[in-house]
Amino acid sequence: MANLYSQVKANVRKTWLLLTTFFLMIIFFGWLFSYLFNDSSFLIIAVLIAVFQSFLSYWYSDRIVLMTVNAKPIKKEDNPELYRLVENLCLTAGLPMPKIYITNESQPNAFATGRDKEHAVIVVTQGLLNKLERVELEGVISHELSHIGNRDILLQTMVVVLAGVISLVSNFFLRISYWGRIGDSGEDNGRAILFIFGIIAAILAPLAATLIQLAISRKREFLADASGALITRYPEGLARALEKISQDPTPLKTASNTTAHLYIENPFRGKSKTSWFNKIFSTHPPVEERIKALREMNI
Image 1 (cartoon, helix red, strand yellow):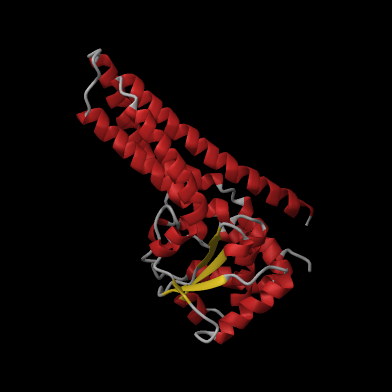
Image 2 (image 1 turned 120 degrees about the vertical axis):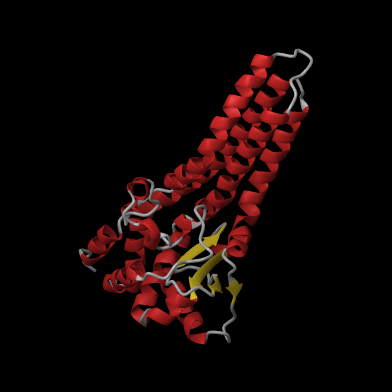
């Protein structure tokens, strides 16, 4: 695939661009606080938050995600069949063996996380293991290995932490704007502007998390589907898996708006699948289009 290597390079660029954008955004908020309240401590706090969130996002975002979904690691002796399946697919894909985690969820679903292919993790639900046939499970695992090989995982995982930082900062901004005091200048209009800005930020915070997730291009799912099918040489396996996963009505209790984009298929599809809002802001391409593309592949 000629586009694969360019996509990998683009993912690396987008990762650093995302980190830089958040860093500068938080610095800007700190400067605005300092200016309106005539207090430089806000800028110092903003710099510390920006540095901390950048460090946290790069080194620990995967651990945060794993704790969020309550995933537990397994060893080869815990599930030798699954372990061998992943091991064989890694050999085919030319990737190091990732760690394997399982969540005690009945909905069939899966995702990959980690900062690079040497520190990657594949998470599968118990429902995925119980409800999919072997060729279908191979299709899902190959899809997630493709995310690892395409370097999607760091950017996808960082989004979870950064989206949370957005909400935290905007909420802090709103509280300070309401309870804070203007500096010696006593400019009431400055406090009013800050208060209005804080309200807008707090209102837009939930949308911001979704919009950031949309920065994770839907094309990545198509690319992971295609490159995953090349690993197994059997696109129908993944197509059948997507059909089963998308049609399963079981809720995914540990999923959240900030982690939904990680999964192979939207974990909230059963709640409000027909909502016009969800269609516009969906983090996944329509599963029907993905299945159609897989079945049109000639391998």
